Image (cartoon, rainbow, N blue to C red; front, top):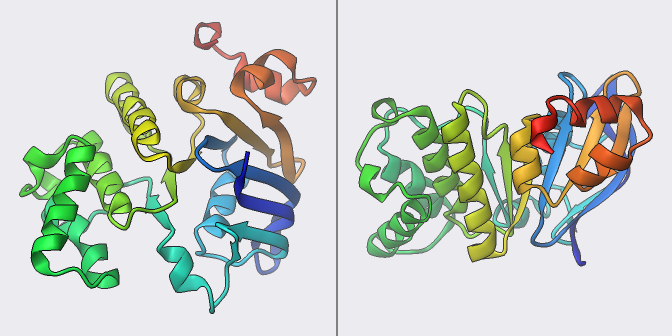
Length: 247
């Protein structure tokens, strides 16, 4: 399958602090790819590199065939969408106004076209009825859906989701998983998701990469079922076999 993201011998971290060393993997176009591991393992650090918030410390990273840099930054920002863990909606704006923001910033659409596109995105995440509500007036799950709608606004090739299930009850979390699968089917987008929730991992993931803080690197790569059933790494087996009901 054609890769849309490629990491080759990447060192991840921050100046003076290497968190992960020699990370190599690719993400295929159209798949749901999970970044997982324990707290502090580096999965969020990798995500920050992938979305261009921090430069890698070494190696090669390409997204949609381009390396992050000053000359490619604007073009790459048009190819990705991001939903941050908290949703990161602007509290002084309605849901519709939040979704309109990237359209106003990065397109030449007129006001009518922008509103039509924003409403399409809200409808896609089943939030059209909440278009005029403020973030404080809706539930946590709805805020996450509105944040996904905003991330969809520019029709990205890759959608990054940071802990989409965090703070949600199991029913709301499962409904969000269903939404991710629906969007994958309808849009053919690639999803990169940071999570440690086993039900979500087994439900939505095509493949997963697992990182370990103590070993400063990636320790497993494969489908959730492969990692659960065939991994020879005790840490990986323990992670995937906690609560056998999730197999």
